[in-house]
Image (cartoon, rainbow, N blue to C red; front, side, top):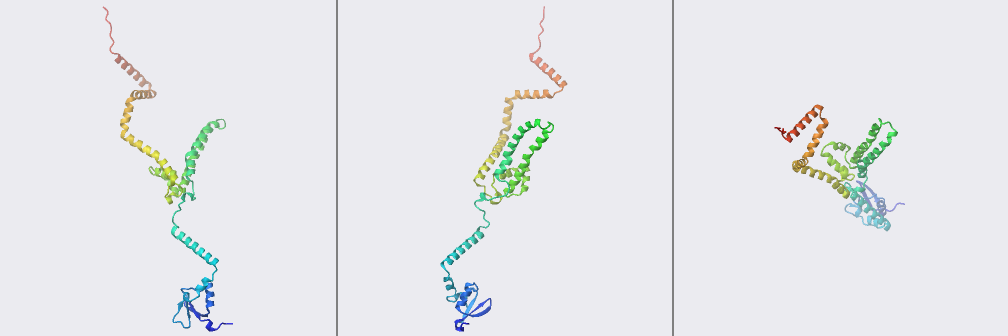
Length: 292
């Protein structure tokens, strides 16, 4: 049974379309179903001079909100806070790198793997190869041993190249930087990155405590070599001349022995005659006694 017109005084407009009449309860039902916008939809009833926004209808949205249970209000409040926090974090800090960059996982070979394959493994391999080659004498023909040892000795080189390429990927650098190892001065900079920098350094540009320690260790030999080069450039001639003067006799003896090894028989005979002449001249003229 339809309600009387006086109990349905409200008309509304939505997107320019008018509908009604509605009772206040029917409007509240629309609010519950989110079919009524308090700001965009307009409402009017007989006796009003002009249309008003639906949110200004007394008791329409306020009672709907107050009718919610405390549990529902609390849940809605938490949801709004969570959504606000999530949106804030995504918009404000989406491009900011994480402070825990050392805990992030990066593809490629880490510093530990790089140290092992470049510095530790070759030593272990060649020491084992030295002793193992002696054991091959009774198993493999002697003319094949050098070929076998040479092939096996090349394995650490391949692993070293692979470790360097993977380490560049771990640093978030292009693998083509590998060819920079063969460029003077550039290879020093690349060596520093490979040796000291943490994973992903090309992106976050942060060394960390361990990175600084390794950077100092890497720099010490370079500083020593540079200091030695400067010292040789400044004091080199003076130092070498002093050493040569102190050891001139030994130096000449070494040079003489080296010449004797490479001289021909004719040069040897001429040298011996020259040496006898020098010895005779050193003794002075011989005195012949006169007998009367």
